Length: 265
Length: 308
Image (cartoon, rainbow over all chains, first blue to last red; front, top):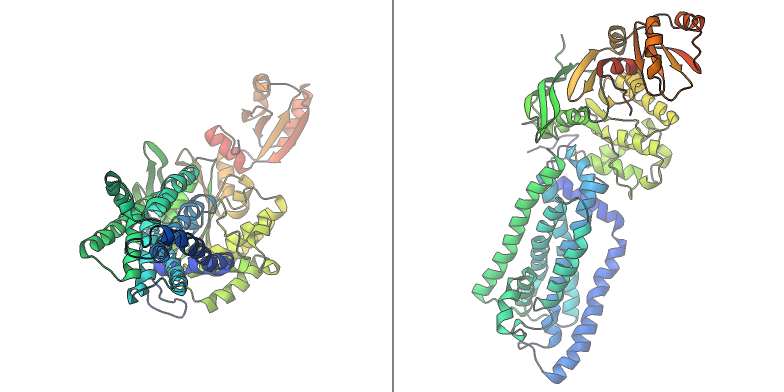
């Protein structure tokens, strides 16, 4: 690896790509900060407190938790999923097709894999920051019950990576954004609604439960709840982690191929 | 004898069944400015991409700084600058930031980048626009910024793919002027173009490419001397088709090209030829005598015009 000299910093190549994304974000971040803080407050007020009041009046506890406590961790999971999607589809297609900033990057010492690792590590960085903000907000609503809650940002980072990696790979392989809206409508929104996000999986009829348990976000929601409640049933936890890690690894391997094909030949 | 800074032997780039580059050989010395002239689709950009170490040769050998791009890509790319055919600037960011951020890809510390950005903006006459968003620049300014960006790592070779396509004449001349200065400072220039005047202006030596192969090479003057006559008479007639004039005009010229809109007569003495044509009661709508150019060389070698 490069060593530090007067005219070189000695940074690894992926780290330069991470820095590029971070610097770009530093120029354009202002709009996203208010929504990062305000959205969880609105959400937890409307659903956790508002709808939660109705739920406790009619059915009492959900899986042994108040409704607010039940849905607060899933909010972190759905948000980090959407961060992984939003940072990956259009921005990556722009970088390989419209603005062509990844083409500019491969004309420098960077290789496609450096761009991929730099991009994903940047998106995970953002997820960690978002996770910290959300954990604080959720805590302020009194919905954290365990020191394990400190792991919530990490779980958010894992969820973001599990979605960002395959979405980056896919976006680097397409010619137009025509499919992106369909992905949002028919994958992201249903996952947001049906991944045991707003009610436990036991609310589904038995034949539907395996289907729900196959959905990636379900595993993210389950891990976030484990952290918030401090309950880690061994086998399910391993299953959830495996599912998300497998998605991340598959996405990285796929993205290495699609980015290479797109940027160098 | 100096070692060539760039050398290719029987270089091939194949996409599926299609040979974009079909066995080209050339070598460039340090400090030279070397051109690839040819129409769109001749294989110029594919050749550039292989030299820039972003595209792997299918066959043949290539060496840049004595290194093999297949195995030393990052090292080679760290020492060259690339001006792509289409600008790849960050439109939402400032001119200065475009330079500084790109420079970080080369692992250059920020303090050095700040100084270099100031110098390069002065060099490309963009100092006053340093804090403006790139979106607001004119086409010529964006092009100059792309060149400034390609120079941020102080490259030994600058590769320019169609540097002035789409620019107005004034912007082109300003850009050429900057490229002369780089050349005087010892930077090796590799230029592709389909403008013959650009090739004549900028290139010490060039190769003419067509269908993935090199059809001629030499200095602009050598190419013209070898493949064309000293002067050209261009005649236009008031007619829908110039085909019928071929036989009548052939005796006046060493060689004759009939294009859809005009006839070109290749001769040594243009004015004398024109006088004799008038003597024979042949009256074109317009007549022009000019010196032979690389355009004529290309027409001779390929039977086609460069820009179509």
